[in-house]
Length: 154
Image 1 (spheres, one colour):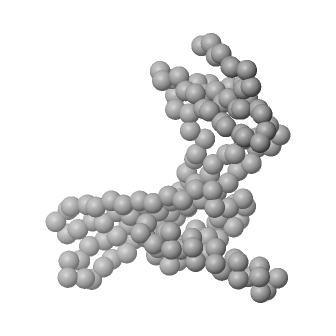
Image 2 (tube, helix red, strand yellow):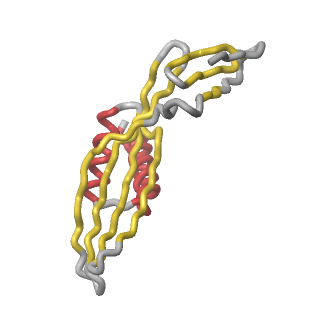
Image 3 (cartoon, rainbow, N blue to C red):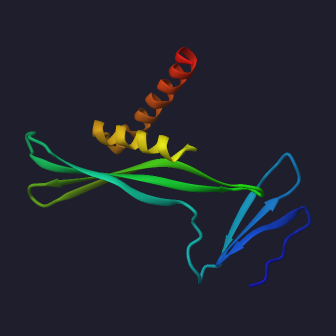
């Protein structure tokens, strides 16, 4: 495979079927990821199972709700560092008595720079039984708590 890089761009990283090209003129930084279609998938985002819970409901239509929480890791590659950022994904599967299933999921990436903070946040989501629909609210609440803590508690 031959890659031609125009003036003003530089070939930053080549691995397997992926090529990353960056615009090298400040202040703009444009990253273009090229992928050869016949070869593998070029996706630096990874997800790792954090925990699962099952909730039995006793509503008019009893059913089970399976919530699966994932730690989402993304890599930010710059010239001089390899920085990882973490996020959360929640998958919800509802299983009804007649065997029908409904699925829902929500992902929010790039929330934390520290793995330990992401773990604490995912634990909080799991303990609260947060569903995909509530993920955005939980993130907003977490951000507000952090702002309050840094502002008033120092």
